[in-house]
Image (cartoon, rainbow, N blue to C red; front, side, top):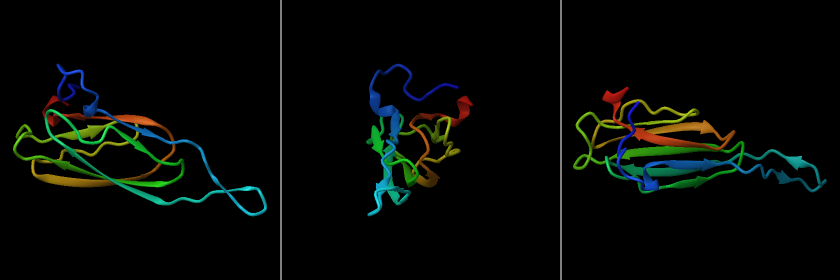
Length: 116
């Protein structure tokens, strides 16, 4: 797999999802699992992404919309991969929303789909 922008050291091409374990506490003092939906948008092209860190609470539902810029993205588009998520190919000037339950921290990286 060849990540997009392999010659740059900028950290904006990778995004870290952090999931601290901070459950709410009920009035009785015992932990209560409360999940909510956290929504984010990541705008990306071949050179950068505008979000570098997303902070969510473990067990929250996370919705991330990936927007791929048409003017500065290779014609094959981008896909975003991690051990937890894989968006599949997103064409230039298109978007895709993925949802998952936050269970652990991870980093996702954009790739050119043709690099497998």
